[in-house]
Amino acid sequence: MARVKPAVLLILMLAGSASAKSLDIFFIDVEGGQSTLIVTAAGQSLLIDAGYGARGGRDPDRIMAAVREAHIDRIDYLLITHFHNDHVGGVPDLASRIPIGTFVDYGTPLGTDRMTTAGFRAYEPVRGQNRHLEPRPGDRLPLKGVDADIVSASGMVLPKPLRGAGQTNDACATLEYQPDDGTENFRSIGVRLRFGAFRFVDLGDLSGNTLAELVCPRNLLGEAAVYLIAHHGNDDSNVPAVLAALQPQVAIMNNGVTKGGAPAAFATLRQQLGLDLWQLHASRNQGAENSADAFIANVDEGSTAYWIKLTASDDGSFTLVNNRTGFAKKYLPARSGASRLRLGKRRRGIESR
Image (cartoon, rainbow, N blue to C red):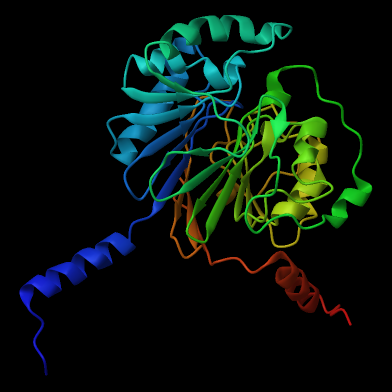
């Protein structure tokens, strides 16, 4: 038997270690706002939103707990989807606790949206002390080892489909007209993250017709294994054509005890074949069809702060863990949407001919 030289063996071991690296995503409970921490296989960090301000520093505390769990000592990129307090309010406090390399947002909020005034006034001077990017749809964030494509910003969406997307979306035939609510929500920065064969979509609080433009009449995004439900699962983000386009294996709802989690949104999600719904909170809204306890991170009135952690491999497989219960579920690389639809019909005994 041929002997492997020590130097060659070391190279093989290092190569194996590198190939085993994963993408980690922490979905942090900020009581119906957003804060999502992403740590790449290259060790870079991207934080999407920072939850609420004030509240005794509650949300920065929760973010820092996830930061420690992720073993990082800086935020390389902080992406602010839009300037409502439940997304940008925690930034000044967070920035006093951990270095932030680059701020990413779409610039200046609408002067007509009074919900942004105080949050942006506190955020802008912090941003001004750091590197600042204002991406537009079609741009890509400079992360290593992952593609972070900007798909919406400042009320605009992609000018052309992402690579591999562009198919006609039949679900658009039943699309209902949903005017945007006039606030910052429709201006949210949305991002599609690709790590090898794994894809994740986060559209902030995108809602109404702007949300629908991403998937109708053509699907500009392609499919994604995991979808962070837009606007906390409120009625104005309940667009079935989005789920038909993405064909996610998992949808995650960053709802609160009563914020988000509209009954109609739950009903739409329950109609999706082969979809697991994970929630940051059990919803107390009347008519809400909550997931089983194992899939819900927090079940009280808002005092706990358990996260949901996702670990993805570049082959497209991924695992989700409920920080409260320790429940974990592994998902294999997704079939195409059409293949999964045929499989579902066979399992129900209605094979199409």
